[in-house]
Length: 283
Length: 348
Image 1 (tube, rainbow over the protein chains, first blue to last red):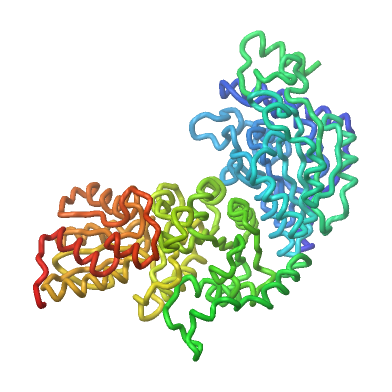
Image 2 (tube, each protein chain N blue to C red):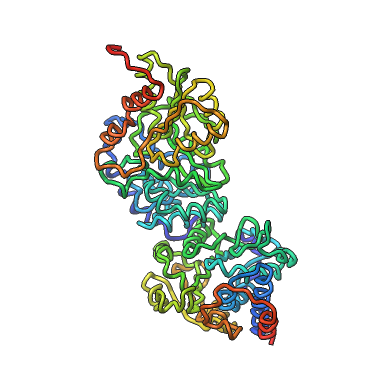
């Protein structure tokens, strides 16, 4: 399999570039939501730097060959952030950017939640919270079985950690010694009904995962440099212990009116509001 | 393919204990005393896996019940026990399938179909992945273990999921055929197995094709359409009815989804009456599927859905429950007589 292992990994990029790509993710999310008439803004804004750091630097992928067996897998367990991932995949060349112009319109491959059957670069269909880490366990196990050293990345939300299946998966990942499984928690503090700490507290996340046998670390999820450092701190591929990165983030980050506001889990910016938000993001 | 780590511990566990607890299923000379579908599950897959590196087997702390242990003993690096965490098991299987494997994830039908319904739909059927969810001890075959361990709703639930193939194993030979057939099927499948004590219906491993039911007895006066555990007692019923001069066709509708609509239409046209028999709640199950098919085809014939009524069944041993609900041979014969208004001959 090593002959096909030509996908790049840990591409040297500047943190400024990653910050710029995070801005691109946010503005594209605003643009696409206007096409749909409604969408998840704030849950994308919290993970924009995470997506940028993974896709523009860390992941071992080749957009020209989305089915490469040894590619790193990425499971967007918080599937409602797909609107922020699609522009990244287009930007990297998985498909033409114009394919997003009819986002969510009848017949489009691009819905609010990602469809692996119809979208190049999507490794798994998601949308029902709590499933993604189990998918990651299966992919990580299959990778080891195939003799591959690919990593399987899984982006979780903090509210999602209330799902029991997450903990079934966490237990099985350490039991089966899946060291190439990396979970990143977008710890954006907010669910639909309010603060996660009040609705169903997820903390202490690190301690909980550590008790389940994971190695954990915590970073500022809006600092591209800190994210790259966290990725660099992971043990070499082929390890035995699943890895967790808690990324402390702010839901709605980048748009003042949305930051930590439960009113913006889904929404639609219209008229001057749209222009104001675009201007704020591009400032 | 090879594995680097993580499987040796399982190998040790199962090499030591794989055969413990199953002595009652085989006679002293080693042959099966009963033909037991669930019990060839691991053995057949172990054999198939010799030639197909995609096959992996998962269970949720039930390797002893479903004989995944037979697979684990031969392929310890391809056996994954997820513990008592069925939802995780099904989605892990989906992740494996997305990576090119063909995973068989087995647990009691009550947990496979009911507890994991959403994982089956969203993670297996919707992405069209070759996951084989194996629900064993289905229906009320767990007897006095009660409603928590019964799966009488599974046929209705699984057949309502798009892009999910739903098949029922009739006996050991039939199960082998299903497992072999499944390797060529690209999408997700739910395999409904009984308790592992179903008597033999097929003399040899049948040549099956999805969407094509098997006629297991010819007849002209009535067709009994059965599936899984009800095929054999339906044949017993047909034998009893023959003594009354009634010629009963018996169709094994093992392929519930896709249903064999042609066989249903032929039953109505050629025998003039249809009785469906299932070890399941009749609401939405095989009988409903056949009724839909008949109505869609504009075929109005004497028809009855026979199975478990829309209620939670009482506690009792399986055989007592089958008698209680007239799902044994005499019971099915009695229901058939009601349908076609045939009085049993005295001293026949």
